[in-house]
Image (cartoon, rainbow, N blue to C red; front, side, top):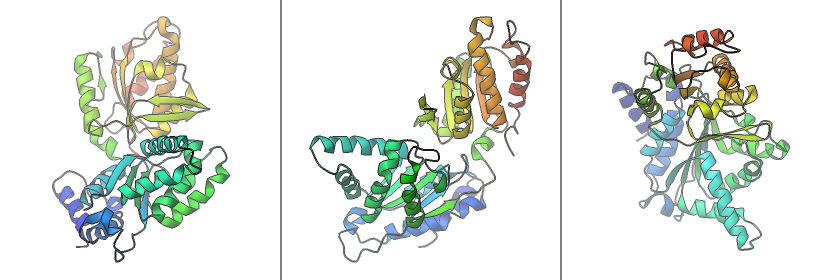
Length: 359
């Protein structure tokens, strides 16, 4: 007892599944502390344990934050599988908040004064350990209830472990009425152990070293190649990503932990601009962009957006995997803007390098 998480991690390193990373190892004792708590609960496990007067006080939860591709989700997977309780749940934070809102809407229809309490109580009845992926607050309706929700859950003995790309102080950063949200940040820092994962290695980029990242023509073979890269980076799981830019929502249906996949028309066929692409870059470290057509005066607006997109990805050091009608130099051969496209073509070439985007 006492070193199970460290042993599981060491076994994964020994099997060559992962590279040993001191920053990741630094999180293991915190996770082990929670695992031991659940392993020591009275027979009957998590849910019944809370009914026993001798059940030990639950430990503090953990808030693990750091850049995308640092291994947060991998550590969460490993931890979640190792915790011996039925009463555990792992869910994407955004999806969980949607569930809470729809539960509250149901309660409101019964005329209850407090819609949140019964919903929080129901969650606390079902789970002792809640693991959230990608905690971030972008929505005022989430911001206004998340404090009471966490207080209710933690007060009922639920242990919360969450990952995030940002430090607690940056949650809901430029949000409406942010001053009302600040007490929640203090509560988080007091009730969860905040741990920064500072690894220097971005494993999502590492995985791609040396593999082809530019496929042409954009045919079935290219699609298969991109499918298999997507599969390798995400396990085929997708949770979607909603970007909030100047009061608008941009929805990327295929996204998981900093890896996004989108057809050319979804990013360049709509009236998006530099601010939209900048928001994309702030949330994505690897982009799989499919079916880039030949560009000319017939699709001049799309071509111009594509140039802006590539510039933004380039400056943000995002790893780009792409399928296109032709090689970069032959994508834009006639029409206004074809001369300026030479820089884009050269950037596309540079971004194909195995070391692209590594610091």
